[in-house]
Length: 132
Image (cartoon, rainbow, N blue to C red; front, side, top):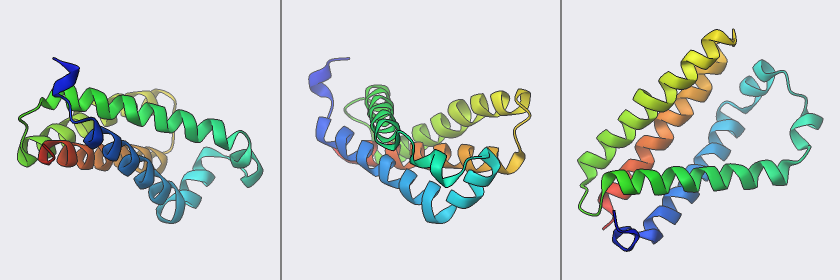
């Protein structure tokens, strides 16, 4: 696929949207629950927070670029939602689920993390599919 056919502004907005969703998801919605099941103290979360956020943003950007290339330049809202959900649930959540199962991670932690990726990719697909 030709990089010129990608709506790079939509990719950037999808990246920011995903990053902001993470702030809400792992903040007021499920932050304390996630923190408790990860076994992290407030002090541990504050360590290297800038580097963690920068890495999260870069990885969200890579995900958005990848999804935009997959969707192609003529995607629709419906295809974007379907492909985003299939990616988030069918690839990311199931792959992480296997890792969490073998790592004996608590089910509630898996649901928080897998749920985030399912919602994030669905939203990203909706935005990328509808913004031409």
